Amino acid sequence: MRILYVATVVKTHIMEFHIPYLQMLKEMGWDTAVAARNDYENPEDCKIPYCDEYYDIPFERNPFKPGNNKAYKALKKVIDEGNFDIIHCHTPVGAVLGRLAAKDARKKGAKVFYTAHGFHFYKGAPAVNWMFYYPVERFLARKTDVLVTITTEDYKRAEKFKAGKVVYSPGVGVNTERFIHGDDSGRERLRNELGIPSDATVFLSVGEFTANKNQCLMLEVLPSFPDAYYVLCGRGELMDQLKLRVNNLSISDRTIFAGYRNDVEDFYNMADIFVFPSYREGLPVALMEAMASGLICVASRNRGTNDLMAGSGLLFSAKSAGELREKLQIAISEDCSAEVRRNKEHLKEFDLKNTLALMRGFYEDAIR
Image (cartoon, rainbow, N blue to C red; front, side, top):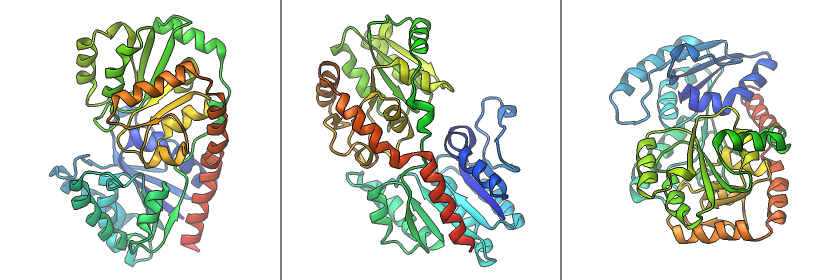
C-alpha cells in the first residue's frame, strides 16, 4: 500500500503532528510519501522520519496567492504519477489543492482522506468565514472519501456534508507519557537559565505568534501581576509587534521569548500556570501537553478547549482581559489540584495510542 500525506508546510505541521502516524504506517508495511513546502530556515534540515519519498510543493498559506497555481500543478503531477492507495490531506490550503488534484486518482480507486484540524466556520466565527470557507468545505466534501473531524462541534456539522464517510477522532493525539513525569531538577535549571527567581510565579504560553493565538491579551494582563513572569515558546509573524507591546507596557524584564523549542516538556515542568488565550482552536496539542504535565490551565472558551476542559472554572472569553485577570487570580490563590487531576483523567481519551488505533482502523476500512 502507498499513502501520501499532503500539508502546507513540513516543519510546523508534518513534523509537529504526523510523525507517529508515518511511523505506524511504516510498521504496517506501507510506503509513505509527504507533499508539503519545506519551511525550514536551512532547507537541508528538512529530514522527515519514516518518509520514503518527499515532494517539496511550493504551497502558499494565503489561499489567494497566485503561487498556489504552481503548487496545484506540481501536486497534481505527483498524485497522477504516484499510484497512491490513499491521499490524506491536512491544513486548509493543502487540503483544498490536494482534493482538487486527486480527482483523476479517485477515479482509479484511490481514497481521499481529509482531517479538518478545525473548520474556519464555527459558532461565533466572523460572517466572512461562513461566507467563504463554509461553501468551499461543503463542496469539497463531495470529493472526500473519509472526512476526519477532531472536535464534537465540527463532527456534528460535517455529518450534514456529502462526504463518503464522516468520522471523529479526539485530536491528533498526545504522548502523555512524555509529559506526565516532571523533572524537578530540570525546573530549577531552566529557571536559572532564563533568569527567573525560584519562587516567582511563571505563566507559560506555547504556540505560533499569530493574531488568532492572541498572546497580546496576556501581555495586557501581566502588569496586574508584578511578581510574575511570562514565558512564550514559539515564533511567528507577530513577533516584532509583541515585543513592541512588551516595551510599551514596561514588562520586558518579566517577559521572555524563548523561541521555537524541542524541549517543551521542560518548560511545562518549569511553569506554574499555562495560559491559552486563542480565539479559535481545533483540538490544541499544546493545551493537551500542559494538561498531561499537571499544570494549572487557564484557557479561552472555544470548541477545542470546551472539549478538553468541559465544566472547568478556569475558562474565559478571549476578548476579555478582565475575565482572564480574574481566572489567573483564582489559579494563583486557590487550590486547583482537583481540577488538575480531572484534566489528567479526561486526557486519557486523547492519548496518542488511542488516536493511532482509530486512524489505523479508518485506513484499513477504506482499503478493505
